[in-house]
Image (cartoon, rainbow, N blue to C red):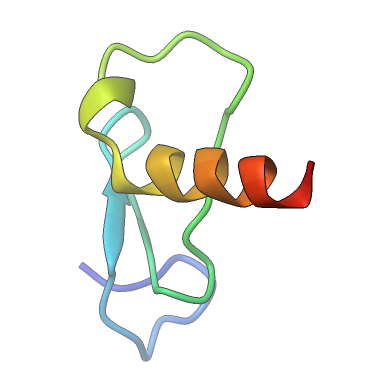
Length: 56
């Protein structure tokens, strides 16, 4: 799977809820406020969470 925003790049992370691929540059949670049963194993969510902790 390739990045949804950069089709020439391989996906670094895949949103299992929406089945979308993201490269390392675009890797972010697609729906951070909504319910997601995959969240505990999601790379994008972990990256979002860490970036919010560092910016606070």
